[in-house]
Amino acid sequence: MKKVAGNWKVWAGILTSLLFMFLAFRQTDFVQMWSAFKSADYWWFIPALIILFTSHFMRSIRWRYLLLPVKEVQVGVLFSSLMIGYMANIFLPAHLGEFLRAFMVRKKRQVPASAVFGTIVIERIIDVFTLLALMALTMVVFPSFPDWVRKSGYISFMAIGGLLILLVVMKKHREQSLRITERVTKPLPEKLRAKITRLLHSFLDGIVPLKNWKHYLIVVVLSILIWVCYGVIFQISIYAFNFDKLYALPWTASLVLLVITTISILVPSSPGYVGTYHYLCVLSLGLFHVPKSPALSFAFVVHGISFLPILVLGLILLSAEGMSFKSLQEKPKMEEDNTHRTENTLQHVPQVAD
Image (cartoon, rainbow, N blue to C red; front, side, top):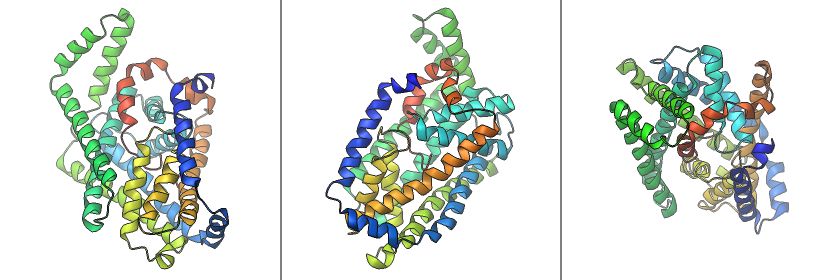
């Protein structure tokens, strides 16, 4: 805990969250907020929870197909690892839960963690391209889409496109990439250089083509369905707060909410996206003339529905693995250090409800 507490990323994230929480609460009517909380029909969130976990189960199935060229791993193992990793992301900065996901799969199925991490990077790239496709659709059906969202989409496209090109080049020119890595790491101790080379080998092993064209089709369909689930959760939440009748919200509102709130993951906020998520949720609903106070109540409930069940289930599964929250920070440090650049990339790739 001392290491995390002393990490500048933690404090920068907390300050960012406090800033956005201030912006979210500024000029808020707490009486209206409480009224919105009381008037919501929380029974709607039962199907929302079912859909949420269905989307995570589909993520596990998709992950299985991405891992299949490396090693066959059961969906149950991947689902457990996914939930524990997402739970860790709520507490830990910089998406360190993704390293934990890889560590859990390595622990259970003896797959090199760096190879598993390679599939997680590919998973994130797929998610971003799916999000950008949704953003393009949103621009068509909702012409009033803010310019700053459009620009963030262009930046995301260039960043993730550049990462994809880099990975393809490294994979295609593997030996040259390794030689460049050796030159860059030459000032480091010999053992550390050898460790980095082995990790890079293993990481590139995880970036492999799928076994056949049917698997590509399955991955594409699952990716679309996963994001459809997220959009449906927002639509259900709109019904729960009766916003569809009170403010005549069209179906496009859930699409706009999905795209804009996902950008909260791009902002280096504290774990759990506290503050950024709430502010952007209020901002999204404001485009449809929903008052700030009930919109903030909506944001708190939807954020809680998205994160608290994962927190509870993740802790249960972590306990079942014989691990504790303290052990989350005892993951091999060398692995974190030597994948530092990839970790930085992951901080800028959206992932909903992790």
